[in-house]
Image 1 (tube, helix red, strand yellow):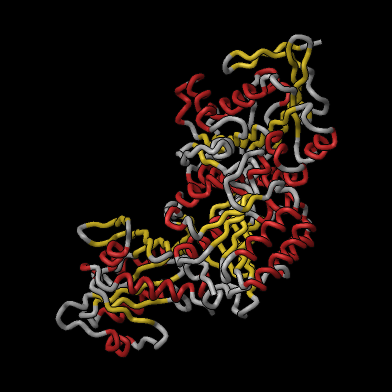
Image 2: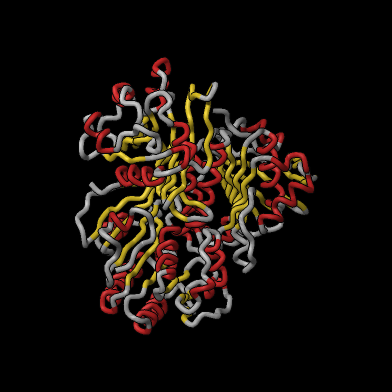
Length: 233
Length: 390
């Protein structure tokens, strides 16, 4: 069983391969480009012939697919499954498609769980793809509708499923939206973190938990599918 | 009494759910337990009963679409379907429903609405809670348990049947024990078979207060459209050369393939059957002796056996018996197919029984497989045997 890499060059070199079954929290301030970073990680997963299960709580499934189409049409017939928690919440009628399954709302954790499990089965058992990435963007939206204990229970189950499926789980959290206790509670579930902070005019990121000490902070710029890092002071 | 509308489950419940009783579909996270409550609700609407849908995680305007996914059209039942909207308040939306819980995080307000709807309804209605776990998440475990006790009492008083969908997230173990063993009159567990990921689903009766049947678990699949189907992953069709096994498999199946050479099966036949709430995969073996090792391989882990014989050819019966031994089918549910009944000299099933010395508890079904006659009756006989209450 091979591990995973994020597809962010310098960081991959520093932390090496991420062990299968790992769960990572990505936490950062609003508008720091987290969507682009998670999309890049997914994109690189698809390039590595991983399958990707993407739980979208902020954008309808079609919009998520659009991003991939715009950036690189070729990878589009990849094995991607989107759990769309938005469309039905907006009261729009839309049926499931090959790539998109829709949950009733971000409150409907039962439904979200069922759809994630269905994609896991499809990718691992039916299509025989050994490596899968589960990305939830974002836990913060789910936390707006359900309390921390509820979300903890949900994640407890699904971080466990990521482990037993030898997958990689990445969960996006908005910094500054939750109290420190909520973040501390969530952290117990994860093996590592991608931390993002604002740094003067821009933003910087580092990885915690996969090396004895956190990696240095890197200022970054996003250029399409590429995340370009520079070491910051 | 109402029925659940789920194949076999009503048999396991000794006919269904008596008035005034409560039942919970207790599902493990990630399996499609929510469909059980929906199918029960739809079945009762279709029976002309008044039903209540307590929405706690879906927008009420989306309910019809949720059902449509399974081919269940609620438009015809507008008058009999009442929605308690315990969702809109959560997302700040306005509601068009008569019963609205302004603040779904308040168990008192929810309690008030549920009590009211139960009082105002005709007797013997069905009330289905879309997600008891969501109510628990929003209102607290202890508070919800107290409320459920009250609702069940009310249900008993007004002779309504209460159906709950519940997802067993890792709640306090005392809460889960209460739900599994004490709070409800009947508990149906819905679980997943997992190896790395969940790849199969089953349900079973954990308890019923009104009968003491033995626990029985059944695999199931959810079809869209179609709903819940009992799934039987392997039924083996065996029998001597030229008895009509492939013809039988093809006559039963909605889709089938055969690996054959010059008209005779050399490896296997495979077919898939969807019939009356059952979904089964059928494997036909070759009949010639030189393929006997394949028969052994094909029949591993079978849940039932069809033994096909040519009713006109008594010489074949010895070989048929030998094949039963190869499949190691003793003890498995077995139905003998007396095929080619339309041909002259065909022995009647009872004549075959005495020739073959078949015990009385094994059914012998007459068929004309190439005309499709009797094949589904035979299928029903075998699946009933496989799924019967012990």
